Length: 265
Figure 1: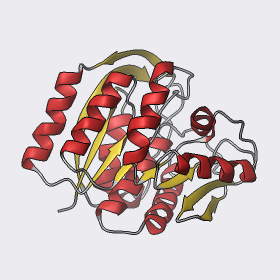
Figure 2: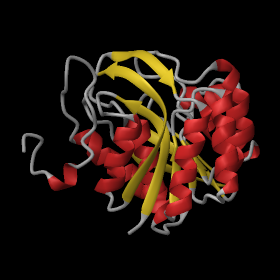
Figure 3: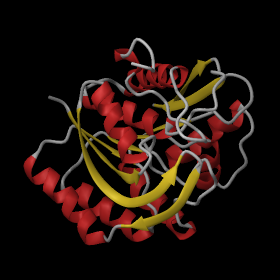
């Protein structure tokens, strides 16, 4: 059994964060494990409160997993403070973690800040050099590179800049640009564009978490980076196409769409 670990925050409505990661791992035929960094009070309309866990329990969660179970890949999501980032970095280096995917979660769709401003430097200094793949959206890429991004050419320049900060492979996600949803992969000094038509749905809660977790699952299975990104792009496209309404706000993607005839099953 292929085993994948997520280190991220908990989403109480189940569409993003730890919950989305574990669903993705299961849907893609891997065994999911989790280290929770924070608990959020949120629903489909927004994030209303965030409570960080302390560094000791985060460190102990990571140690408990690696001392007992082989970890084939690691996905890192919401890590809100510099202290938590330092703790995760030290723990992963100590345990020689491999196939690390960093999703630099900074702001929720409702506008709630999920990364403290002073933690930006720690994320760049500690986590990017550990990353096999990093998956910023346009806003996150702008924060990391301190540049504005509005075109494909600027996405490519941002990917190169993030690679120079230490990340081996960079996927800049273009979902916030107009037109087709095109993601840019910069790997081994070459670019590849992954395009897909837009799905007419407002229900996209957890897409970033799901996409990065899908990459981690494929890396854990031994796929090369380009293939892992291509598979993740196909998977998230299907999950968005089969997304569904939940609550009174932005509903989730359908992580198990391959196994359901329809969303009412």
